[in-house]
Image (tube, rainbow, N blue to C red; front, side, top):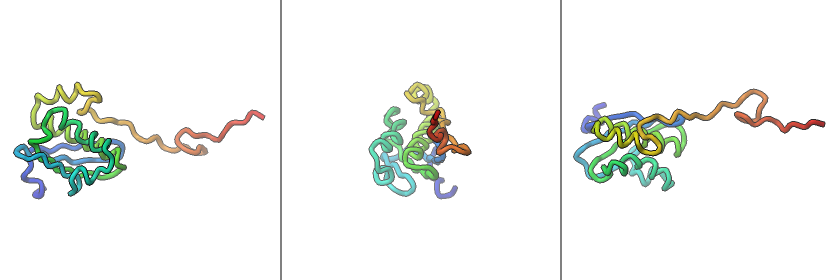
Length: 136
């Protein structure tokens, strides 16, 4: 934890099978680092960048905070959702007044999205895909 000792607030975010650790530094210049890379370099899709930045833009803290994020597991979409959840929780820890704003957003940024991939069942092609039924 010595590597992150200069950061003021910490929170964990989860989505699908991704887990993100978010560290916030109050006196910053708006740097957003994900796994050692700038957010623009790490997330290739604009949608993923928008999702990851959603809580910061909503609270208007995108220019005055430095964020250091480590994320693992899952794909790009799940990781972006995990980063969004972690950033929202870290902002709520930093300032309790932001909690109602983050909860009132659509979707609720504080609550974890618990939807997971449904497992494949025996004798089916996928989670629900059964072979085609033929009456005759």
